[in-house]
Amino acid sequence: MLNFIYILVTLVTWYYAGLYYSPVLMAVAVSEVLFYVVMLFQVIYLRGKMEAVFRDHAVVCRIFSDERVRVRVSSKAGIPVPRYALNMRFSFMKGANESKTYVGGLEDNEEREVSLSVTPVHLGVMTVALKPVKVYDYLSLFSMRHGRKTDMRIYVLPARRIPEHSMISWHEDPVNQSESHPDRGEEPPEITDIREYREDDPVRRIDWKLRVGSDDLYVREYEKPSYRSMAFYADRRGAFPDIRWRDAYYDLIYTMITGLVDEYDYVKLSFTGASEEIKAFSPDDCDSFMLALYSADADDDAESREAVGVPPEGCAVFGRDLKLMIDGNLIRVYSKEDMK
Image 1 (spheres, one colour):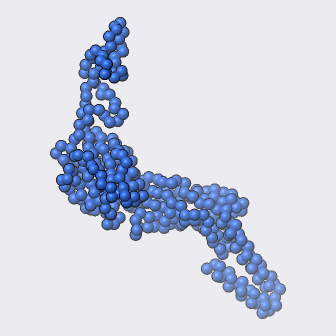
Image 2 (tube, helix red, strand yellow):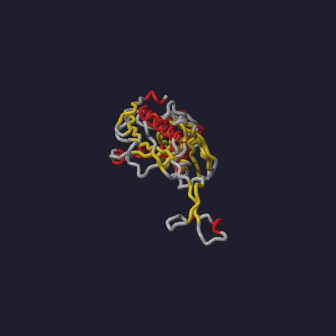
């Protein structure tokens, strides 16, 4: 629009300069043309000296929390940049997009960090696309983009909350017994007996204090505790009808596994196409599982998503149809409203 107005004013000046043979108006008209050409070359020069990149490749936040998307903007022009514009598009799934624009300026050879606030309202991976930076000349007659489109990810985790019902009620006997703790095989603290050393005894159990004044070796025996565990399997097969359905799927999974971690010593977590299972001892481990699940869904590897996995016996299986199964038995059918 400014470009059109500028050209119109220049043409009018030329017209009256020729109509009245005015040297002053002719000089003004020539100056306007020169300014126009200078502004064009200026924006071409500035465009090649500007750069805008994301500070982070990925960030993690909770749903409905205020997150900052940070972009580093720099100029090597040697002259001030009067105006530039950053345009970002935030997207989850088709039909769930939002755009934001930041406008600012830079001093000569300055680097600045720009941040835009975003509040995620859906779970999963939010993709943030940064268009090439748009640069303007001093009169804002011209604008040109420079660089290439870049992306970053925001991993949006569900809010932590206490489940309304006990997870143990899913199954009459869901507890798997294990003689050793899976976390680095730590020794039980209580000593139950001391006996003579045998060849197959581990050296770490030798009681060296009893060796003093004796040629015989003695080992400590510990009580073998029983640790309770549960297995959970997220079935990724099938498609989500809409984004609210996907929110319910993620939210219900997170509520279930954090509830299981609260009631069991540890939970073995896996999903369709996963290379290995995750042993969860705390809600932080549940966060790690959700991030792995998000990444698998975001990459949309159809082959791994449709892979036929074999969940462990006694494992709780939760599918995208929001059905909870254990050993082929239907335990409960959830709905999108259950995530509230």
